Image: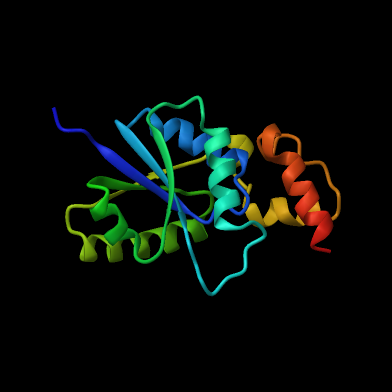
Amino acid sequence: MRERAAVYPGSFDPPTNGHLDLIQRASTLFDTLIVAVATNTEKQGLFTVEERLEMLRSISADLPNVEVTSFVGLTAEFARTCNAVAVVRGLRVMSDFEFELTMAITNQKLNPSLETVCLMPNEPHLFLSSRIVREIARFDGDLSGLVPPQIEAAIRERCRNSM
């Protein structure tokens, strides 16, 4: 039987409980889920790529079929190098749909064998984003329920030092 791998790309800066929710759920749909930090050389993130990789490895350690890596370049090409059959994306609100539809069409043009699988977040994570987490942390707000407990301290420390 052919192994079915999928790529879940994103900036994950920082990883949230919404990301973890999608990682857990997508890992049940594929033999291998490759969580991939997309490196954007034009953006300065709150965390380095290496720090985000470590956080993602920490929060997904109990999921044996999840691999964590990073890449530079086009998602469709990265997926091809991984022999992935799908890209996993999260859809929270209507504006996400428009963006993800455009990306799905583009990825399919670049890699015709690649499907896009969109998952809706569970209700508690519907409006959760890394940007919101960074903003709450900058003002020392309550992060409980927004990020995995094992990375909350790192987020608080980094946000305190970036003000």
